[in-house]
Image 1: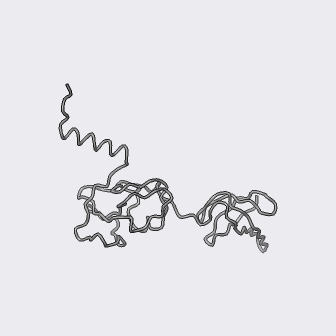
Image 2: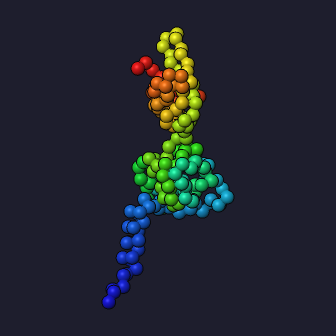
Image 3: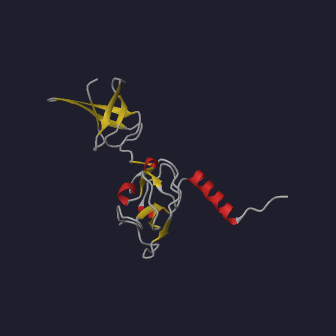
Length: 178
């Protein structure tokens, strides 16, 4: 004969399963002054108890651009603090790309987001080599995607040689002497 499980034991087990399976929930309450149509563009940073944070209000899939409309502004319950290494402010999230599935009501780990790619894999780009007054330019094909400041590999379209260089803010690649 099966023994009935007490309600509190069941709640503890359910919370444990949710934490293990889905990450850490954001212990928060929606701001009373916040309307559902209000976008979460302004949030406070580094407040003590009662801190305001942004969490997803729907599932955000890998590769999807994070927009403020997919986020919900909530106030943490007094006494609860957000864990380290989570992105909770609009400046940290707007325009970033999800690296993994982000669940509603959960904190967004900093490791789960990335900058948008400035150059895509297989794209034709201009490659520059600058040494003193000498500047050499060539056309190359990217072998991997990259954001501004990333170090990526490209293949020279004329020679077929593989070069490594830094993605510049204008989408060009600057290579050094090798």
